[in-house]
Structure formats: structure tokens, C-alpha cells
Picture (cartoon, rainbow, N blue to C red):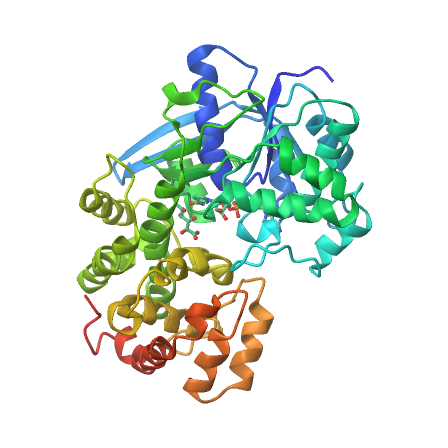
Amino acid sequence: MTSNIGIVHLGLGAFHRAHQAAYLDAYAKRTGNSDWAICSANLRSNQSLVDALASANYRYHLVEYTDRKNANVRTIDSIKKTLFTGRDADGHWGRDLDELLLRMSDASVHIVTLTVTEKGYFLSPSDAQLLTDAPDIAADINNPKQPRTAPGILVEALRRRRAADIAPFTVLCCDNMPANGERTRAAVCQLAAQNDPELADWIAAEVAFPSSMVDRIVPAMTDAEFDRLKALGIDDANAVVSEAFSQWVVEDHFPSGRPDWQDDGVQMVADVAPFEDMKLRLLNGSHSLLAYLGSLAGFATVADAVGNAQVRAFLKHYMLNEAAPTLAMPAGTDLHAYCDQLLHRFANDSLNHRLHQIAMDGSQKLPQRWLAGALEHTDRARNLRCTALGIAAWIRYTSGFDGRGQAHTVSDPLADTLAALHQQHDRVEDLIAAFFALRAVFPPELASDANWQTAVVDAYRQLDAVLNFDVDWPG
Ligand code: NAI
Ligand code: CS2
């Protein structure tokens, strides 16, 4: 296959279009080098976006908002092909699967990137074990040459390259997970081992899975946002909006080559872990606090919630007293400046960043955002009051009702399990104990911390008063 596509991406969502594709657009326009064009595929939702981008010759607008008055409008040209392999409206899988696998097996592709959300790796969030009973993974184990999942597609493409004696591509995970390269490797190797242990060993030995920290706030598009863009003269069904800020820190381990994208702002480092932990616990940890406490308190967006002085003080207290003590900040990054910048970014009211969007998939997010840090504290009952309130709010949120009895949808791979816990337990102590017993979410050391469990029970009892602002928020 002749093409200048050097990167295949899995997960053509809003974030990919506003982040990676924007960096590679800048790279191609700066260097005039078209060897790192992207073929981007959706494995699940969003077939219509795949087709609409093809109809628009893959060009779309990216609007980067600094604030309500200042927006930078870009046209992005780095995606040169889009594919869909998910289930279509008639229930059939794999429309473009053959083409995707052909491209991924082509020697001109050197990197495969991913943004398939945390749940797209099919790993138990607390211990990174492959969920072999998940129906889509079970389907890939039974039928590995017609894969449905991201790990399954990576395994089959790597099998074909090995069989054809073509060097493997590098796999670059761009999802919000800690050690995201290692986790992707774990999913791929555990899945390969189900049918072909030799292939699993070869992948473990030969394929590079560098980690990366990705950061740019990219809210889901809404009809109101499309109308706002039309008022700016942008009539583009594929447009995406983001904040002006962007950061991408990548572990420099690309044996099959990579673009020289440092001049376009990509930070290449030897160890991404300090950047990942900082971002996941400070930014995403704060986001999840806002998502559950803020939405239950009646706020709609991140900017609405941080417009409240008590909420802002609460977040700052969480960042500096609960998250920061667990972090080794990256050299050259000032903790206080970073936290102030986060609050400034959250206050950007040109982004309509809905709290319900962030609240999705809490069971997949909380282990790295709150619980990994909590493990590093000893006296959690005394020191982690904001986190305890956040956990209480998450548990309340998963009941499907807010503080005023209004119903909302709980979107989470564990939604049915969590709903059943609410059905089964009336007493607060029993409900919290049942949540703490969820092994997929709470590591054993936290689950057995009776004092902290009591603190979460107390926080749950206080929740209504906190959400109504009848008592001061901690901080
Ligand atoms: P989106 O909703 O626009 O796109 C989600 C993408 O994930 C789609 O391509 C969808 O097909 C795919 N997907 C969902 N479940 C899947 C599964 N089980 N298997 C395979 N693919 C699956 O969301 P967006 O904004 O693109 O975010 C995606 C991910 O990007 C996030 O979960 C996060 O890890 C990362 N990210 C997002 C940021 C943001 O502000 N939106 C910022 C930093 C990282
Ligand atoms: C958010 C993130 O949806 C969420 O869970 O916390 O997507 C957040 O917007 C990004 O990580 C910012 O880089």
C-alpha cells in the first residue's frame, strides 16, 4: 500500500482532533513533511463523524478559546483517512476492519496512537488485569482475526507484522491513565497470551509502549456550541473547540522512528511519571471532585462551579494539602503556579465543559485520580477530608439522583453493579462498606482502613448540608 500515512490512530473523538491532530498539523505545516499523516479510526461510537470527515476531505476547524473575547481559529489537515470498525446501525461489526488491519500492517506505519477512553483497554482499574469475561474481549479471544477491541486490533496487526517480518510499530497511549504505556502493554500482552503465548512474548520483547501525559480541556460539542461557531462564520459539522492551553509530554522511546515534533511543543522526556501523577491527581482529581460535588450541588459546568468562592477554596485545599504531598513535581514545574494556572483554566467560561461529561466512567477514573494518592497518606481520616467528601458524592451520584431528587443518567461500565448496591443497602454504613468492597475500584489497603471508611460515612451524612451550602466546605 502506498501512502504517506505514518500514524494510525484508534479513537477518533474530540480530544484526538483538538490535541494530537493539531500538533501534527503544526508539524506538517512547519516542515512541509507529509510523512506523518494520520489515518484515524473509530472502533465504537461515532460512525457519522468518520463519514462526515471523509466528505469534507478530512479538513475541519479547531477553535482554541483563551476566554470569551479571544479565540484562535485553525484549520486542521493532518488526518488523511478515517475508518469505522464498530457495530453499525444494523448490528454488523467491522465495516472497515480489513482496511484498518491492512494499514496497521503496512511498513510505512511506524506509530499507532490511542484515545479510546479508560474503559477501552478492558483492564480492571485497580490492578490492570485483563477483563477476559467482558463480552467484547471474549469475542476477540474466540475470533482473534476479526477483532473488535483496541487491544484485539493491536494484537492482530502485530501478529501480521511479525508473520510478514515487518518491524513492529510503536504503540503510544494518549488516554488519561497512569503509566499508560505499561497498561496498554499489559492489555495487549494478556490478550495475545490467550491464544498465542509466543506472540505475547514477542510483543513484550519487541514492541515499544512509551507512556505519555496529555493535557488539553476539550468539551464535547453541543448544538449550542455549533450555533456559536456559526455566529463566528464557521459552519462545520466536524469542528471542535478547546482551551488555548495544550501540553503533551512523551517518553522518548520510539525504535521505529517518530516525527521531530519538539519544535511544535511536544516535550520529549526520559520519565513521564512525575508529569502523569501531577496532572492526574491535581487536574483530573479536581475535575472529578467538581463533577460529583458540583453537579449534585446544582452547577452545570466547571466554570459555573469554580465561580463559587467556597468551591475554589475547597479545590485549592485539596490540591495543596491532599494531592500535592503525594507528588514529586517534575523538575522546573512550580506547584503553586501550576495549581493557580489550573484554577484559571477551570474558570474559562468560554468552554461549556459540562460536569456530567467528566462524571462519566467514575469507576475507571477514581483509582488514579484520588485513590493512588490516598494510598500514600497514613492518617487518611484526618488528612483527606476533601477526598472523603468526593467519594461520598461519587457514591451518591451513582444512585442516579442529585441532591434535589432530580434523576440523571449514570454512564459507567459498572453502572448496573453500582445501582444494585444502592438497591441492596439502606443503611449508610452498609452502603459505604459495599462500595469499599469493590475490588475493581478500591485497593485492599484502602478497603481495610476502617477509620477512613468511617470518615466517608460521616461525609456521606454531611452531604446534603454541604451541597446546600448550609455548612462550610472543607478548606
Ligand atoms: P469522545 O467522546 O469525543 O471520544 C471517545 C472516543 O473513544 C471515541 O473515538 C469512541 O469511539 C472511543 N471509545 C469509547 N469507548 C470505546 C471502547 N470501549 N473501545 C474503543 N473505543 C472506544 O471523547 P474525547 O474527548 O475524545 O476523550 C477520549 C479520551 O481522551 C478520554 O477518555 C481521555 O482518556 C482522553 N483525554 C480527553 C481529554 C478531553 O478534555 N476531552 C483531555 C485529555 C485526555
Ligand atoms: C476530564 C478530562 O473528562 C474528564 O474526566 O477530567 O478529560 C480533562 O478534561 C482532561 O484530562 C484535561 O486534559
